[in-house]
Image 1 (spheres, one colour):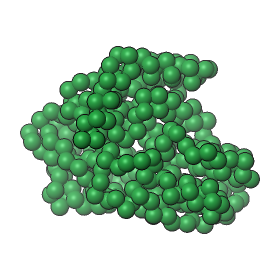
Image 2: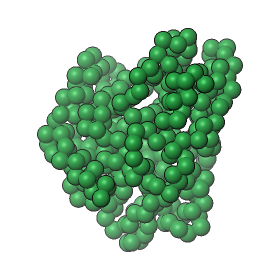
Image 3: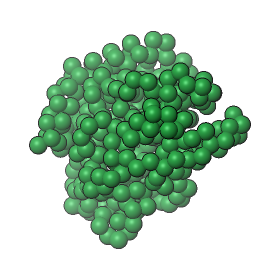
Image 4: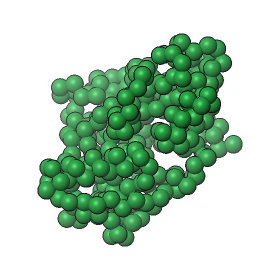
Amino acid sequence: MRLGTRGSKLAMAQAEKVRRLLQQDLGVSATATVISTSGDVKKEDPPYRMKGYGEFVREIDELLLQGKIDIAVHSLKDIPTIRPKGLALAAVLKRESALDVAVLRRGDRLTDLSAYSTVGTSSARRQAMIRRHYPSLRTKDVRGNVDTRLRKLHEGGYDAIILAEAGLIRLGIDMTIERLDPYTFVPAANQGVIAIVVREGSPEMDMIGRLNDRATWLETRVERAISGRLDGGCVVPMGVYATMVGDEMDVICEILSLDGKQQVRVRETIPVERWEAHANRIADRLALAGGRVLADAARKGLSE
């Protein structure tokens, strides 16, 4: 089986995890095909400045549709809610962590930093949350893979950087971090989830489906429904986090202004049954409370 992936260390670690599961659980051998994407080429542009859909997945999708690879491995949060015809999300693996973490050059917590210290992140969501919850700190774009960002931190370009904990776990990086409370620092929709995409109706579709984690599938469906209804994406400072609790789901979502001074948030516990209707209702509630206005303002502000 031909497995398509980006070539970064993190992407390769994710592909290797899928390859091992294919071999161990399904008895299927797979080899990785490394594909360079627009997101990899535009290394100086923060994600919220990139144009078009799926800068990190488009080229891989095209090769999958052309039959040049059999499956594609992505970070689910990189996959747009609107997808090309002919592709199907066959499985999501169990989420390792949805949390954001802070890594500091000196100290253990963001509250240890002095005023005007610089926090590196290229996420509009993380920048807005830093500005809201740590108004004395400054934010500055930082690009590159995890190793590059850590190097820039230790070289003194930043006093702290914000990363996804799942990336550190997958890369086997063990270091002092501050895990940020997901009910204060709400994660991006689908953060920490590996997705496997196939062609609709292909022989791989049912087979790969056996790797699907049901709880993560439901949680991420709710997150994607809410984000998609408000056209969230990486441009809007928006967080959505759903967690299964028995037959119910704890859902929190919020949208902030780019400067972090305005915030609209909704938190509800919903039944798993009819999750889609409940997710759409929560999204509409968020929009009517002012979330739509903040989302539109963020898109306009970042396009100027």
